[in-house]
Image 1 (tube, rainbow, N blue to C red):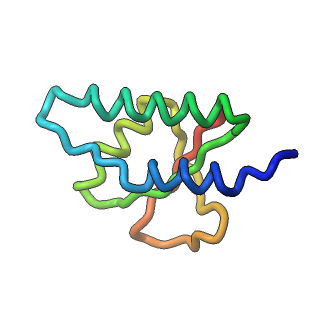
Image 2 (cartoon, rainbow, N blue to C red):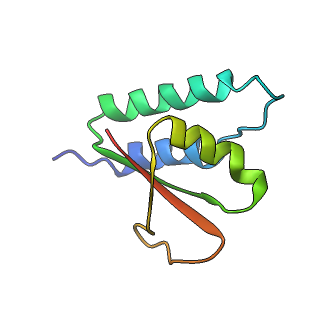
Amino acid sequence: MPDLQGPATELLQRLIRFDTVNPPGNERPAQEHLARLLADAESAGYRRISLETGVDERFEPARRLYTRRGFDLTGPFGTYPKNSQSVFMTLEL
């Protein structure tokens, strides 16, 4: 199996700072960017993408975007602890 740590880190860094703040009705740039990131991940051989986002209302656009793309709510992954300020989501590719 190839070493995916470097490419995985790069992909995760691109997802971590994903900005979903757009004028209402203009969510397309975020949707297109997420679609490209997920296509890159799939073509690189990833089988699953897991992410962490916030729980308060300013993160609601991101949660809606991820849910529309097929991400499901999950529990913490990797070294993330369970906490009341995080929402964890996973997409099986």
